[in-house]
Length: 448
Image (tube, rainbow, N blue to C red; front, side, top):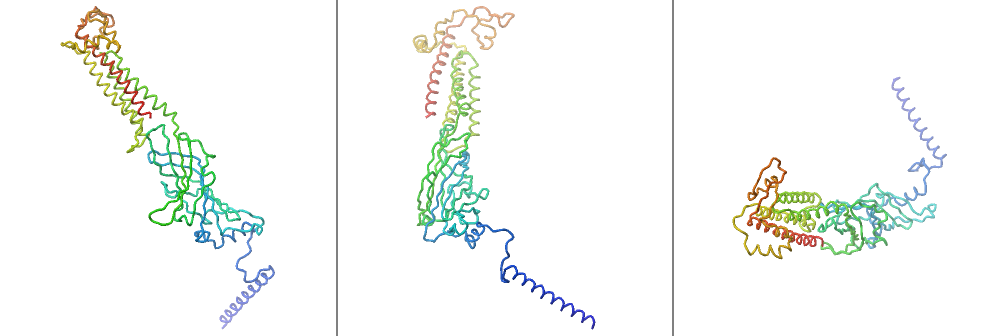
């Protein structure tokens, strides 16, 4: 019995304490001026007009609904401030670092500044309010308007909203590399709403749609011209018009470095090819010179494959010039081999009279063969043993001495061999003039 009585006393004591605690709370509430039905406590910080305005504006605000009646049009003004551009030739894309300037009106975000201490504008996060779904139509990387740094929007008391997010745009661009590295490229940035038709969202351009004030100078490209147009398009899927804004960027490649890397070697290649025709007909260095020139051209062709994509059309003219020069050098080497064979081989048949007569006449002097014409085969010549060993001239009478660099006795050339050497020199001179004209034609064609 004692234990039951003790338990009953404990229960009665606990109920009394709970009743006393509730009465004390009610009394404190009356003392502090709050009713017992208050749903939220008083904040521990002092609320500002901005806090009160944001609570009044964004309470029950639906950021996924267009902030106007469905029969009204939301006009979005758009512009772009370009900071930096870069072109990727292998992917046919243009990378543009920029600030996208957007402005529109939100009917649900209007207030009277006199009711909020003269507050005329506030900053809100980009995810707190409705934003137009403006996309880059020719984007190469999905969503074109990236909220870098979660930039805020500026909301004014008349409902006007200004949003300037920094973005990195990657757009597809049709490139024409025919005049590389002295080319000019034209690329477009096409913006528009992805889901709203022109009857719901209309686009308008700023007075200065493309700004280059904050442009950072590029080491390779200069923006020479800009343009912006508003277009109304009708697609086969829908009857409603769709509005887009297209920004045009005309860029010219800076090419001082390419002049030193590509143009100067091209001139050297031409000179090396032509100089081979002025070497003596018997000189074997002709083949070596043409071989070195062909190797140089091949190295540049490999360089071009690293710098320029293999395009199905618009092959760069400089590549065509180097490839044509490679063919020219190969034919030049063929001519050199024929000339060397003709001048070194001991012929038993004399040169035909129909060929010899013009070469010893006016044509020979025009070709610069005066030295070979006046030189008679019976004239004495002082030849070194080293020269004989290089040219293997069996027609010379060799008189060895103890010193290879000493001159040896007079030798004679046969008239038949002299005529063939004259003919070989004439082929060199004619080839020189022919290839000179050919290189001029190539330079004129591939520079236009």
